[in-house]
Length: 77
Image (cartoon, rainbow, N blue to C red; front, side, top):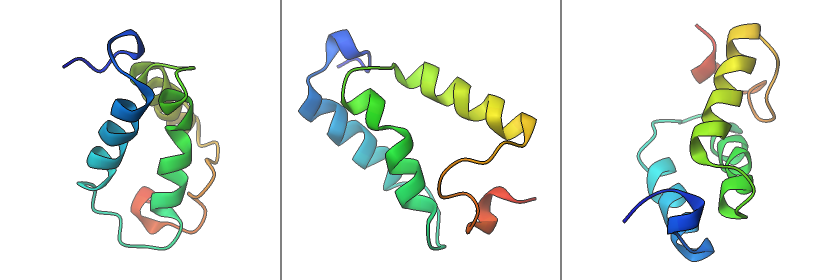
């Protein structure tokens, strides 16, 4: 099974995101909901995972806020 939008159904993409987020150690309030929202465009078939991750990394490097990050020390080093 692939991960590209063209290779998956919406239900498969939901499972991929759910499974992936279930294996992230994010023990503080707000972290998981922000990450889940971040991948909604992938689930809806609008953006590939690679594009979403690249956008996130660009914001993180620039220091821009992402929804859910403000209450999470996981992203503050």
